[in-house]
Image (tube, rainbow, N blue to C red):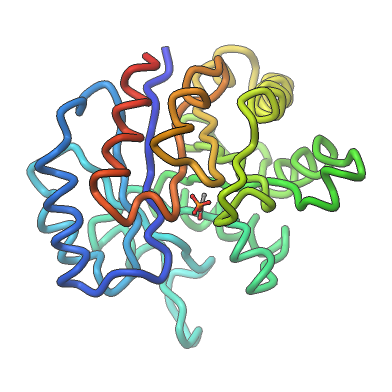
Length: 252
Ligand code: PEP
């Protein structure tokens, strides 16, 4: 049975002080802990204080992004080795804002995934179609291409988590319906079954992301192939993040 994960992507929000207050409130309110794996992804500047605060808990900390080299003349970048040493267990790679705002390509994402895995980080790999692609009937072709961009024989399924995040649903308040999410998750499950076989694909967690809120989380979390959520806006307040964790726990 797959343990759901609820991951909070803080994006470019929260100073150290604000981040500490948020993670303290999450920690204090986490009653359904154990049934759900909980991860927070603060901005790089707050990682250290957040890691310190959750050190004696099961809350995981991830990087929102990572570069594909371990060190060197790459001004402004953070390496996978640095994230690992700072106490991160995961890196989010391929978020639609990285693809669409910062122009990250499949080739770069492939290198990032491998560098993160080599440094001992698990990867939350995001993929999803734009509205134009959905309306053009290309959703499956797009997510399959994005999947194939990063997978090869070196990528071990146990270290990967997928996050289906339709671009049109991120930060818009317009979530995919449970039926739309389930259809794409089932498609990704079938594709990864073809690559890794039924056991590994059966254990693979596929999160849904895109305007997940307390009032829609339960209907999404009960979909058979939805194994948790990657949450943006609603993770910035402990109350709403914890309500989503609760919905994931209730779906188990
Ligand atoms: C995200 O940034 O990954 C995300 C899903 O954002 P939101 O929940 O705000 O749509």
